[in-house]
Structure formats: structure tokens, C-alpha cells
Image 1 (cartoon, one colour):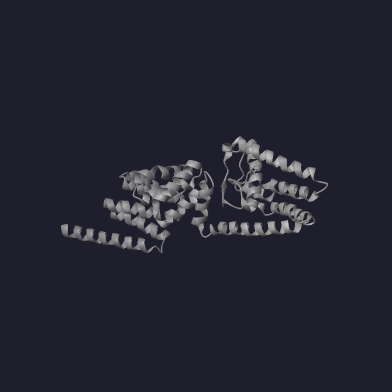
Image 2 (cartoon, helix red, strand yellow):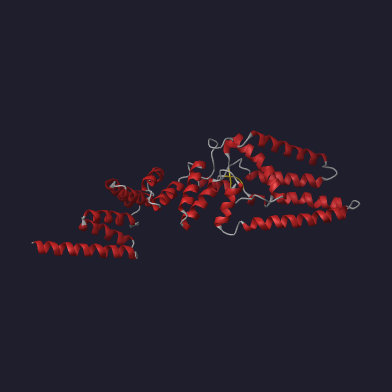
Length: 343
């Protein structure tokens, strides 16, 4: 209830228009079986599992439903002889209900962290089953061998899985490798590659993010920024425009769009975006600096100085900006001397 309330206030609860009830139920049924499988063999775990929406196949839902129905029938059949099976199984089924996505919070189909409490039910089933088996002839040996094999094999698998958490890059790259259409993983890998200067690879991952999640706004700005760094201003401009269409008050996108427009010769259009950036974020000095630079190129030094001084008011500690002001002052002094000589 608390999670629902908080996430609804933040706008993270999906409506039934975006994810119909039948899609949510299908994902819930498949997730039950996937959680079960990953508990007993923890491989291909991912930091984020993207919701497939209506792309989930009906075959997967039917197979998972039959498997769950079969297990439920078995534990009910054994409820008098082995009541712990029913206790553990219904614990597992019940404690997963709040996080199965019937009320969808976030964009994930499932999450490994949701298994902390449901795994207690599975442990109840295994623990009491071991006791029952140990009471039979040769049961202790069977249980002992099974325990050793399970500990050794699952320790090895778990150690490998923990290795993927070495850093952010390995974590999200692994998520890309073991899941499909994982836009969150692609986006984060793109951010890492962009930071490392691997721009071509960053573009590839950002492009995949847009392919899988076209409504995810931040990726458009990031892709435009990388293309701008590569000198591909014509290609960057459409992505900046999309970012601004979705968030006109995004001052940095306004500035970067203006920069690319200057490079392609659309100076007047660029000035409009620099001015817009100032209107939406008056504390942000970059729009003034960019307007000043455009005016310097035009030879309008006095007007340019006004914008540079406004930029300094917003960013008084910016040493680069101060050097640009000094350079402009030098140009203005040289111009004034030339004017006096001419007179």
C-alpha cells in the first residue's frame, strides 16, 4: 500500500491503457515460473528485466500456467502427508502477489530483489522435505550428497554472477547479454561508453534504447550530445529538437541545439534557443556565453560584452569564461585604438 501510494504520487504507476489487465496477468504467471527457476539455478540474472508488454507469447503463459497448476495440484494431494509442501508453496505464491505487476509500478517485468521473502516459503518446503527423506533408509546419505552437490554447484554459479557486479559497465552489459529489448541496460551502457569516449558504441546503444523505448525522453538528448561531440551536427539537431519538444524548459538541450545550429549556419535560429535557455534557467550562464560568442563572431563586441558579463554573474568561478571576457576586452581595446588612429 505504501509503495503504491508513493509511486503513484511520482507518476510511476502504469495505467491499464498502457498495460491491460490480461497482459499483467500473463506476465505474473510467467514470472512465477521464472522466479522459481532462478531460485534453484541462479544464472542469467539481470539488474533490470524489461516488461515485454503484449509481446509476451501465449505459449509461454500456457506452459507456465500448466506448470504452476501441476505443482499446486501435487502439494494439495500431499497436504495430509506433507503439509509443509502446501505451507511453503502458498507462502511463495502469496508473498509474490504484491510485486507481480497486477498493480504495475515501474517498467520492470520482475526483479530479483522481490524474492527475499517468497524464498522463505521454498526453503520451508526443502527443509521439511529433507527431514522426511532423512528418516527413510539411506535417506541421510541421499540428503547429505544432495546438500553437498547443491552447495558446491550453486556457490560456483553465484560467484560467477557476483562477478558481473564488478562495476556499472559489467553489470549493465551483462543485462544486455542475458535479456531482450532491455532499453534500461542499453541506455546505461551508452552513458558509460559516452563518458569513456567510445562514441560510436554509445550511439549504437542509444539507438537501441530509442528502438525499444521511444517514449523514454532522456536518451534523445544524450544521443544528440554524442553526435555533437562527433561533429555530426546535422544528425544531432533532430534529437535535440525532440528533447525540447518534450521538455521545453530543458535549458541545456536548448543551448546544445543552439551550438549545433551555429555550426550548420543557422545563427538566428540558434540565438532564439539561447534566449529560450536563459528564460527557463536564469541562473544558468551558458546561454549568455553562447550568445556572446555569436556576437563576437559578428563583430558586435559591445553587445557581446553585455552577455559575457551576465554569464559571469551566473558563473563567477568559471575561469574559462573569465579568459574569454579578457580576450574580448582585448579585441575591444584594439578596435578602439584603430578607431582613434583613423580619426
